[in-house]
Amino acid sequence: MLNIGVLISGGGTNLQSLIDHINSGYINGKIAAVISNKKDAFGLKRAEREKIESLWIDRKSYDSDEEYNRRIIDELKARDVDLVVLAGYLKVLSEEFIREYKNRIINIHPSLIPSFCGKGYYGERVHEEALKYGVKYTGVTVHFVDEGTDTGPIILQRVVEVKEDDTVETLKERVLKVEHQALPEAVRLYCEGNIKLDGRKVIIW
Image (cartoon, rainbow, N blue to C red; front, side, top):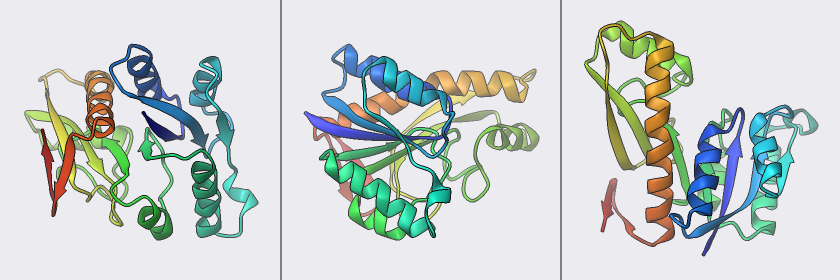
């Protein structure tokens, strides 16, 4: 059973989905810690409810992003974390962090990468741009994290149809439902050792 560290910044609905799938036995893993960069993130309460260790680490207490990231690394190492999952985490990871957990950091993005991704594309802006562009399909991408922004190897993608009368809110809601399926699936595959990397290509068996 792998130890999972989850980094959050907000409500933690993807965290809740992971918790539910672990509790049901779908994921053979254990959340060892939930870490937030925001004190009032509701995800921390979700973790506390499940008696999962939760920490708020204040960036303002550190002189640099590198120092801040090092503290998170230390907390993860102290709990023998094997896999780091970014579940709505809005801070950029340092190069040291990415080196330390190379190919062991998973992120979820609310579009079909490489569309509507990269610097500045997060939250509602992703859906705004998809609607503005007029795409017929959007979706969800779960990927490994590398030094770029949304540029790591893709683990899996799920398609969501864009309806003619969609608003940012309705599209966001439907995409989020798919996120709650896709992220646990990718984490399950990782925990079972069913993911192999061949360059940029992720092979699943």
